[in-house]
Length: 312
Image 1 (spheres, rainbow, N blue to C red):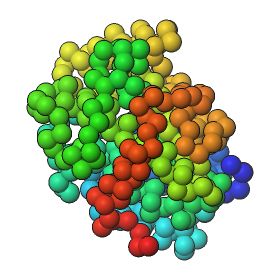
Image 2: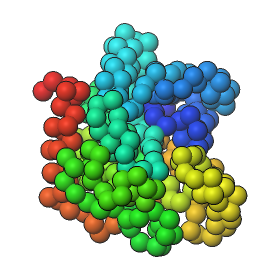
Image 3: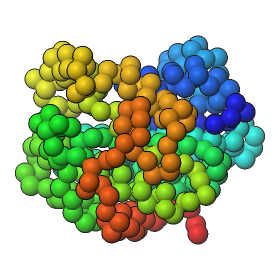
Image 4: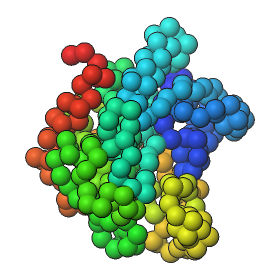
């Protein structure tokens, strides 16, 4: 990415590794205008980020659990680009994600919340912004190594994905015992597998750019991803699990956020469709390479979000 003035759009910057990544990008690329898509009052965050790098930071109110809100947010960004209020789009960071303690939560659109936010909302963002992104732009989607489904990657805490047709995954009822934590975590790991399928399909369908990649931060204790978990689980994640960061099994929030910034800025050289595991390109799980599933995931997600995609 050149030093010319440009815009980077980002979700999930209000806390955790996203906020650290946003701060790193502001410090490393003060010429960039960072646009945060957030549902929160982010005035304090904007001031903090601007103080870091001296560059421009602004917020577009966005509720990722509403696809209409996502569509409206992209329109607001594009209107500002067309008017010259924002420089050209050179980056998109889809970092926001949710993990519930059940698989019963529905969005206003009637979709299962985990799949809606982790997959459908970001698909709408990618598709609506795609034609306006510079061919050399970088699009990064935060995924997770929970999609491997084994102890080495999940530490026995998150069940592996249970793949089903996307139409089922997108609605409540895809997993057994919907009201328990295991179902919520299964929905999470499965949504991350779906996101990787889409990244592979994006790379095939958009061969002339931009570059699209998945970013895996690894296991990152101390973030707020488990904020809806039980008290015991939250305490373990905040006070006990961070001890694992002295081993290769876990990543500190600071390192994970820095790696995400590197992935977004193109510091990590990666071909389109790549899986960036922390600071380097790696292979995702064997299950994540399935041409038929990738194509069907694209087709199903396109159908589910058809009312919010740009006209052909």
